[in-house]
Length: 325
Image (cartoon, one colour):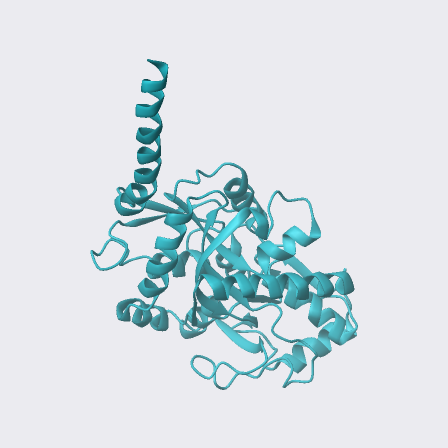
């Protein structure tokens, strides 16, 4: 009798195991998906995440709406620590990543995440850091501002979104280039709070995202003096020089790549489905129009391209931060 039961149960178990995978893939997603953003509402990452996911519920896209959940704090550490250790890995909790931010923070230590804890899905944007001052600032060029910094070590106060984020990396590179100290001030609340500090006159200047700075500049609130990138941004800031053009050895190490990832352990079939659907969603014409209107540069990359970018940045930042500490 036992042999008979075994002969009946084993094929049934195999059949159940065979069905489970395809059912999950075919049925997913059955409810809305959340995307955790490690920065506050109104900042560039939050602003862009809401735009690039706004068509997710369309039948020709993911088929379920995406809800943004903000978990700001400590330059992204609060949200990414939570995502690496507490987020469900069932495909219904995704996260926004920022590179170099989370990679630089993992290299520096003291966090619970690295590239090993996350599964990239797709990249939507590439947002360089820029140096800004208030609209009434006496400084009209990056050379004037950094001449002040060289003559007054530690006196040039610059706000930024946190420690070991793109803004901070740009500040470290500027310090090395001018051989003088800056007073880099990380603000709570990410790029939005850092920009408010510049506009309010709480700091002499700031290092922020091009997208945040572009909107503030269009509103007449700030002046953008330089871009921390290899080339000028011809689409949004054709008249603003790069730091390299102005004579400072600052490359594109601080450029902020943004995209969507899943926690490690998410079912492979879910990752495969998202890796196919999400880049196509980013290419939606409505999204492209809204991103351009918000001064947000796009750079769409698929999962394989993001994996390569993460690996390259890991190697490069390990060397860079060892030199700049």
